[in-house]
Image (cartoon, rainbow, N blue to C red; front, side):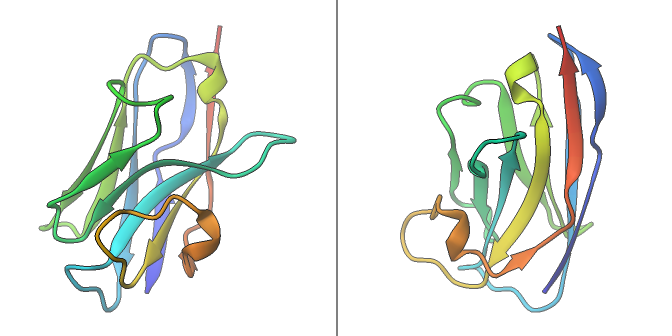
Length: 125
């Protein structure tokens, strides 16, 4: 499985960005693609995840009601629409895939075997 992230940039607080993760390779309905982020000096943290089936999503509390994750089956991408961005959202964002997960989306980045390159998001105040 190969992943390629795109869409980062510089935006003012209150603005919006859309990140996209192009996914290629073998996946199944039980595969999960998630977005993580890592700010300087901080641990990598879960942002949002989605089953490849599109039937279940999961969000970190810090982004709930502001971010929306979705899967575009025609383009084979997993996108995250980020609205009402805050300076604390500044980080390098990574998409990652796990080929098979159970009932709930795992939030521990160590469980993901496939990673895209990071894309930088900077939110100015």
